[in-house]
Length: 580
Image 1 (tube, one colour):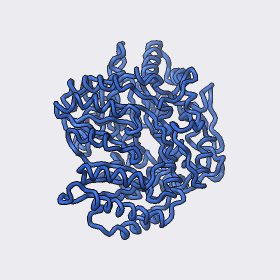
Image 2: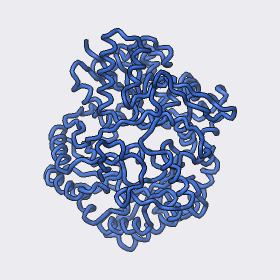
Image 3: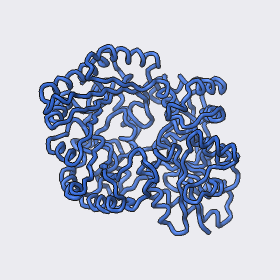
Image 4: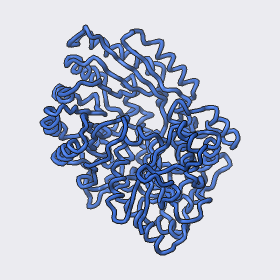
């Protein structure tokens, strides 16, 4: 008997088909004997209206079969603002939204992805969560499901069995109790369920699956290119960055394998761009030789090489020449903070000299467009730190005036700011988000300090960041809020066209919950977090030391300089060290 899996991405086709994780998991599932995995995406509003009017349920792309016919409905949770899309897709599919209303084993609704590291806001709707990387655990889960279905197990019997698979979190097997002040008093596992659920990783990343022959989109997508994943994890330890800790320990692929995968993937797809992906691409220690090998293939075929996630402290003339060998694109760097004091607080380990030297190299090489990303509202931030962003942008402009290869073309310096969101499983998980009015004040302060027309300033709206902070730090009581937002039309909340702040605030009021409690409150040292049910392999004691170091402005060296004892290396068998 076949097992059918609906791999659901809670956003549009154009976004979902740009996701390399979806392609990897799709290929792994379809390589399993007796498994048929299909893709499902969220329809745009006008199409959804037509589907609901004509009684057409959400269906899978390959077969056109309704999603409710599938054994497993699996969602990828990469962004908190996609939560309402998950509920809306279930509703459009004719599948009961709440897990408690789905009493039969099929369909089993599962979810994974970065947001699953705090699964609690979605606990009412998801039967089980996959914590960590899915290359191995997904296959184990599908196999266990097929065995349970064929053996006639009930849903409850299967979930108890599934909870014994490392990396599986079944929210229905945990009881949460609250204090009078609304904080969590305890999280108690039942029936032998693990606590915490430790994430799974693809330990042997060299042999981890990579879909060389992948699906070619039928229309233009956001990232229409071949992508290689150089390594997972990050050696840097930026204190705000959830991904940097969630994907530890660092594991890399060899340059020989990557070059072979690139040639095969490009030959199969016909793409004209190759992107080298990681959290910090220029930290890949074999980047130079890899680029040389790739350019030998790409240059005569006019395939451009794209290196996102470059750092300002290791950008070189040699690297610049490789990046622009076929086609020159704009450069993007993320200093995150304007002053060195605040960069030390967040452990960015990038100096002003690093950034200006990088811009000099770029401008001398003919670049005339640089994007700089910053956050406002970081812990300990002052007005002086905000104004330092404008000063740094002006210094970049002066570097262009002094070193530009061609001043006739002009220069475009784009400064972008977003509102800092304290994330689970980071040293800043104890921090508070700044109020929205305060964020706007800092935006206006920075806006007024930028004088040159050559510098463009863009800022992210604080309302979306506020809701994201609530959801990222929330507990399972937020399920009622999510359900009300969805029933009142909430979906595709990552899109400006669909996001409604008023709809969210009405739902909080109706459910008797104060969103400030989740977003704007600094946590006490020993508070029980909702996300204590999961572990990224990094100890709470390490995060606390880093939080206290941040408040003292102390810098922690990166993993290549000195092991910081975060605990993630314990996820590697045989006492191996993290691969840098």
